[in-house]
Length: 118
Image 1 (tube, helix red, strand yellow):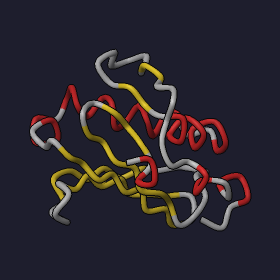
Image 2: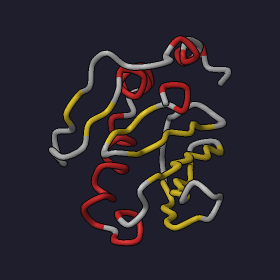
Image 3: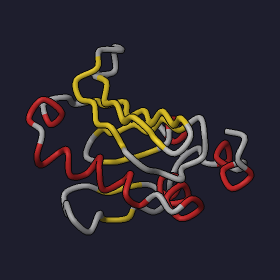
């Protein structure tokens, strides 16, 4: 990450506090995921991950998920992988102001987190 708003992501190596997702109450997210959402206005990204757990059976079937947001200018693609580099879900994002090149988040045990928080 080169964006100064996300320069401090490496400080998140665990979480002492979890936050319940407003739209999917069975999902929580860590302090690091919350920091990302607050710094760059990306609560929508947490929403995409949490709502996919409800709406996309192939995603829900994966106990460990790697979510990658690849940003190219004002467009992006959101990928969900199964943890073994196999893509199980893809969504085109027609507009975003998320900083390039994007970010990777993990989802496991109903928690959205930064890889460094695992």
